[in-house]
Amino acid sequence: MTTYNDDDGAFEQLVAGALAQGFSGWDFSCLKERWREMPPPWDYRRRAYEASRNVAALLDQGTGGGEVLASLAPLPP
Image (cartoon, rainbow, N blue to C red; front, side):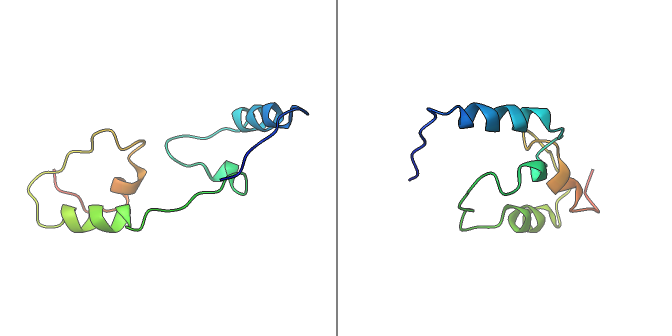
């Protein structure tokens, strides 16, 4: 784990820069190269796709902007 020393105010500068960027939904591409993450060992989009096939209805609840599920079209009602 990386620790961060903010004695020079660099953290506040990074936060201000991030807040100045426009974004919507879960598209954080404007912050590329500014974070490190470890993706989960499973693929959400693939699991959602597999679960959405051959169902009569699908409810998108609390998944953010809905971009991932919208990309799985055609979708059930």
